[in-house]
Figure 1 (cartoon, rainbow, N blue to C red):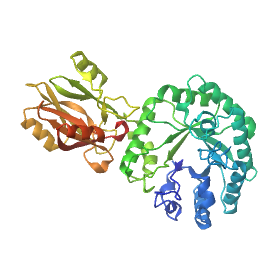
Figure 2: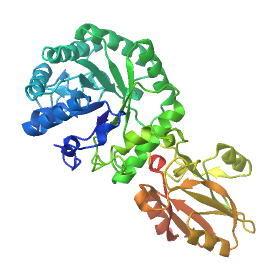
Figure 3: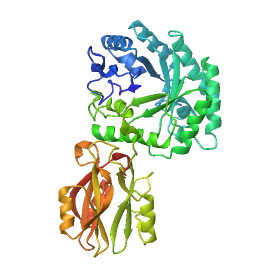
Figure 4: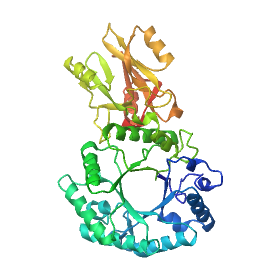
Length: 451
């Protein structure tokens, strides 16, 4: 499924409606068989735009999925559910209006997708949270689904949820209760369940458990693949999306039934063409490419030893060996949770994991037991001239800013004669303030592990 940002939102893709122009080629790939939109797009977009979109989707056998709000919220700004994701003033009534509008303009609602009702209705604890019983939420969601089916009787329904945030002690029993109650309230079983993965949180155990539960419950498992929300550039957003696909494939053996390539962020600013490495549709092609199953980036950890300066590695065995020699993980690197604070960034272990990667070489100065790193020809030449010898390939990195990578700055501390490397702006500022010489950007690291 392709689900671009809403074109009505600020900073939305400029080419959204171009998707449905005669001759648009994105849909010719059999890989895209569903298209996701929001209810707001249906209610607020011009008739001619929607009519053309529905005609295009029909002509290319692409099913329409509409995200709907299924829980009732208060009109009072301080009332329960007001301003909370998934809530609306009159969910069944608004769902009927959306369905009627689609039908009047020649479209067909194939699926309705609930916007995280279990999470925001039961567990969410910020302003205007309601903490409603699961049975009550299911009744509300079921009424909204039934409302849509009065217009489109064959419409199926799915939902998305951020499952990692559900407490360990109750996640399985709560989800089983939810599936059962929702089926009873809607009059049909849940067709698909999209796992909205929080990529910066632990995932292996919980996501594996949910995938197994969905299989036993005969519910189609969907995975949402997106980029880093605060990416700041199209290239960085897409690179982080590629990493997320690699992370999933490296951790989980079972392929999802449905894949959603989605963005609700300002980036990327273009959807097409899929051949562009900075466009949203590129992730569709990437998902089916050999690179998607290559190893994902690993955390590039910083170690320190008195008198020896700094050592960086993504290899656990190498890190353990250096710990035995008196090196310690440097806990002052990263000021931002939830990452462990010795991570300087991320690094690829395979040159095939992304396009245009180059080696980041590790150099060693035996006379002073110091390490340094270089990817550029000038950086390597400088180190060789200073008496360093090439020691190993530490990993693979991007050579240029337009790759979407994050700058890996090289600093030199004259009193100790040590090279220090950093990506985090706060850390860079501290090094400069401490008198370290900023020698520029040595390379660009993959964005996923950047603190």
